[in-house]
Image 1 (cartoon, rainbow, N blue to C red):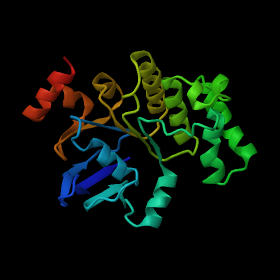
Image 2: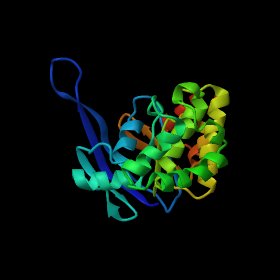
Image 3: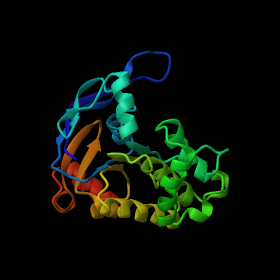
Image 4: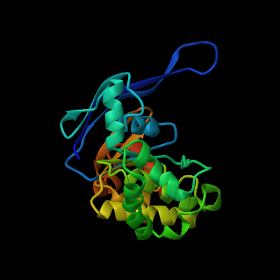
Length: 249
């Protein structure tokens, strides 16, 4: 995966009745090497999740250009829909359908979006459920699952469509330490299997283990970016150094 961002900007309407807008991304630029995993880190409210949503094709930027492996990210509705069908996205809130079992949550996109038969869909999810220790929970509804189990089902739902890239937005932020460890281990295994990942996380030590490159997003810009070891060992800016000192304390 080679990702290039050139001056990506995003605005949202300002809260209240005064009108106007708030600039959330103020010109994000970077060019990665040929990598498997890019991790976005930075202070809350700095623009990480907004940037991830744009990369996943869920939002359209107000300006700038984006390309993956030399191909421009589509901006039109039809093109973005085709892109979203090629990639997978996982959010911190799981977004599982509460009235469906874990199995039916996995089957839903395969049957209704990718047009597999129910038999073909069940066959596709059988092995991943077993591999990640979830087969015994397939009959349960989300309300009967732990937070870690729900998030692993959400990740599996994104994986079973065989995405070219998996985008994960703070997948452990709502979990306790034990459940966080479950989900991080699953992500690490996916990375080791060669999956292409773009991940937003506050788990700095985990980021260092799985990232090929890391980008520091703060105040709507990418202030620093580079290989994981250099990113942590030789912070490129004073602000990054202060950030790392705080979060790694």
